[in-house]
Image (cartoon, rainbow, N blue to C red; front, side):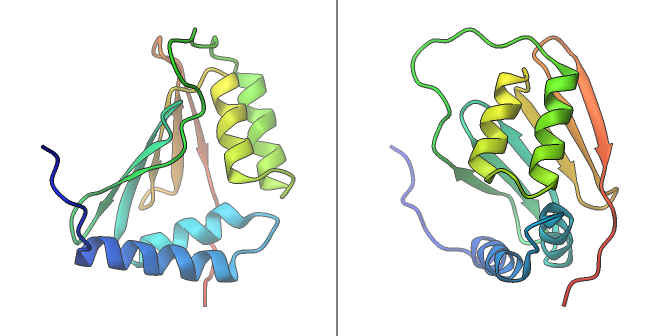
Length: 144
């Protein structure tokens, strides 16, 4: 039997930081603002697993798992890794022209099966299922 969901200091801190970030996040270039807000709240890494939309946050207060709405159901073929399609999805998102859910779906269609955000190094590594990877740095920003 699974343990009951309980609120912890790690969950409270993460959710508070996410709410602060979403409240002050600019439409264009919003990810660095979100990332810096999470970093300042003690989040060191964020691991995303597609198409499940499961996220693991590693924080100073302990790890936190978050389950989003999966992108697919049942048994499906994994799209081949397409670096150009991934970069197009990133640029569309960075320009403020997609929602986060749309970005995740476009990343999956580009063959991304997981990605790893390293808040200290300010980089995101995107992985395909056959060892492909694409690494992108993001800029430091000031948050209020």
